[in-house]
Image 1 (cartoon, rainbow, N blue to C red):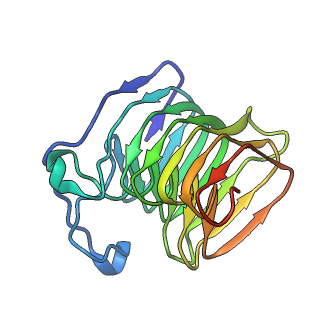
Image 2: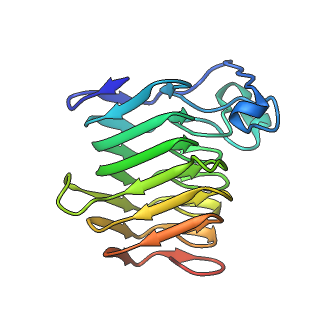
Length: 212
């Protein structure tokens, strides 16, 4: 799947799409509705080179209030495969866990703006799965236009990024985290490996356990 500059996807939501995944393969412990308001990719790769993705709703953790729009994991994109983003604006999107992305493969982001996205629970922008093959790589000096995370929120841990055990995150230069808010555990919450260099954290806040 390839998406390019000039594309706008706005005000989309799931309606009555129940997906039951293989627990052993995908690590989903219950037969839940998983995300992918726009993209659900089990094989191959998703490549986003630009475009605007605005106000798309993946759903809420508590689906009883609006069950037709419920997708617990990955508000916009759910993929256990490769995801590459080098541009685009992702704004005001919402999910239960992972307001924009749930990825359990290799997710690489070298450009793009993630603004005002939210998760009811963990990972206001990105939720990384629990496999040894689950890797998130953000920013690369001299490559792309840089990555901005601004004004994102989570109802629990990780206003921008949340990673489970055995996952890893590498955040290089050319990346800015600004004005993000979480109820707990700051901008980044990861139980696996984390490496950060030459990254700016500006005015991020948390009600508990660290703003960054």
